[in-house]
Image (cartoon, rainbow, N blue to C red):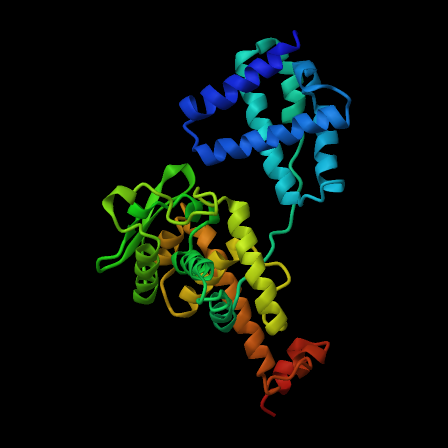
Length: 339
């Protein structure tokens, strides 16, 4: 195989197959691209193969296993991240099988690489008090602080994924009652999420202050950085981290060690559930395809209630085994019962 077959097929895969045939969203395609950027970088720095010299024969199971081990050991990626990268590699290997049949034996080796089992982590979330403290941390006396307060409040109130927040435009916000926000999630699927009145009022103040109320601004990003462009996920993560540090210094006992933008989504879900909102409605707000994904919050809530009951236990029920269990003959115990 010629060395340019890999680069040609990779280019076709990212620019033609994924958007045109598979119909994946631009965000998903970008995540695939990012994986290949790290993979190609690994080939160059660790295997000594320059990008333009990578051959399809180099895309083999031995090298891919080395790449996955490198992700875990040197880049400190989690098992879940490792499995996501492997899923993208498997998808590309299946594509190569169909378009370069002579490479099937190599691709079968890649496809035989197994996923690692990983224990699902309990989602981190903030309680109601911690959420109020965090959302009140940005300085409302400054323009940037007011923007950050609205941004973090909407991230929480809508239960949005961080990329969904990045992609919001002014036209996605409806301020007339009932206020709503239109979120575009995975697979370019949209959903309408209701806004609470305080959140709608905050957004109106923000849109007026930013001069975004004119119809000509409908296509503008709702939240813009210093360059006037929409925020990236890293940009929103930076903003959240900045205020978490401030809030944690003031209240060190109520903030978890790791707090990502997705934690705000988990927090909203838990607060809705604890307020008695049906799981079906929570599923629709979050944009989950399967309610089984949403049920994780119900399991967490049940575990929290169980621990609270155990803590409040008065010791009414003895942990000592009942008398009949100590009796070697259950029949004798039954005969003696009531005598």
